[in-house]
Length: 116
Ligand SMILES: [Zn+2]
Figure (cartoon, protein in one colour):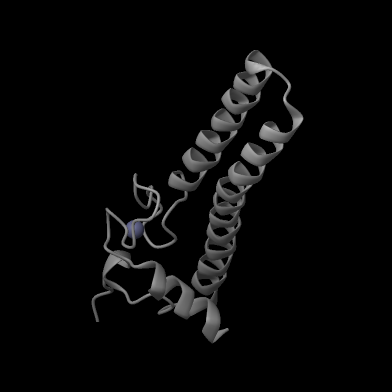
């Protein structure tokens, strides 16, 4: 029987090592996504804090500038997440649901991880 190409397989099909790869990839994704969400939410608190502290405009802008840099770095890190099936970058947009290379969806990855 001819072995199908790896990208044609359903996620989780094949050896247990693949499941492990999916599990690690998913945890890595969740960590990155949570970081971006936390950074985004923290912006609101940062805004309130800056409003209260009244440090003066140059300091306010410096803090905001640094925070935006951190947020962009976090967002970039999230888009650098590699697809566990094809090993390429999953998507260039933050909340893309399917791999741009092999069409694997995040729900499918999550389903494989939940089964274990
Ligand atoms: Zn892929």
